[in-house]
Image (tube, rainbow, N blue to C red; front, top):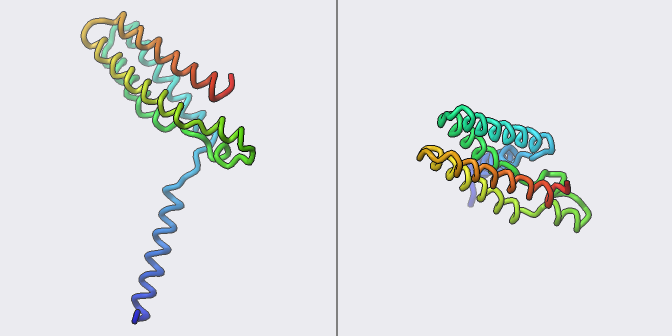
Length: 144
């Protein structure tokens, strides 16, 4: 038999778990996406400045900013809750988004390695491939 104190404790614990799940499951909004896109654009500009100034530290900083921000991109809460099945499918193409994210993360590592090894031309080619990945997402998923 459950004592009164144990049942109260279970209710309190259950309430805490529910409250924590609401805090953790924050909504990802269009404003969040725009902010992340601006951070990624700035990271790309930083890497480009690093190329022009022949400064590895600037290239590394831009690459790290890009890698830490690209993984935050996902469908917005509004896109996930869309009632139109086709639109929801188009907006929620997470497999393509994840693939593009992985490509960008790996290419930023290559940029840093090649620039570090004194091959800025190859680093710049990888930079160009990242911009291709950006455009692929904007054209396919964002309907540019």
